[in-house]
Length: 115
Image (cartoon, rainbow, N blue to C red; front, side):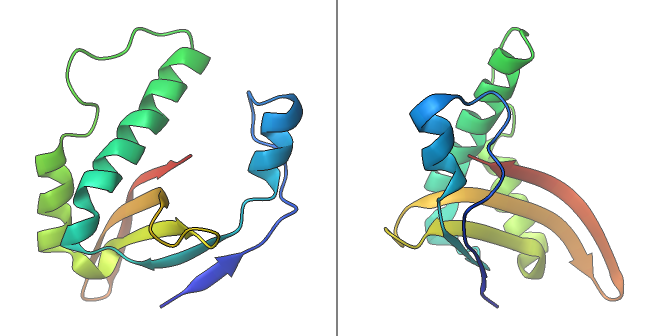
């Protein structure tokens, strides 16, 4: 499964000027997550949660917001519910991740972390 999202998109909250314009025109493709993606997924997730904490003026947690083991466990248990967004300009660059429970006829959103 691969879907495409192309700009112009609405500017992201908290971004201004050139950074907002850059974020608004990023194009991404969505694909299934693999175990090779785990280090980048962990990094993107930490970056996204750190930005959220800064934006909300909260202290960052002492440990990882979403531990790498949790990401690996979700991918192992529910590979059909784990996806990454990759930059079309650089397909090796993961720009977001989605972890969910997808079993039988049940689906449940779990985590959405996009940069």
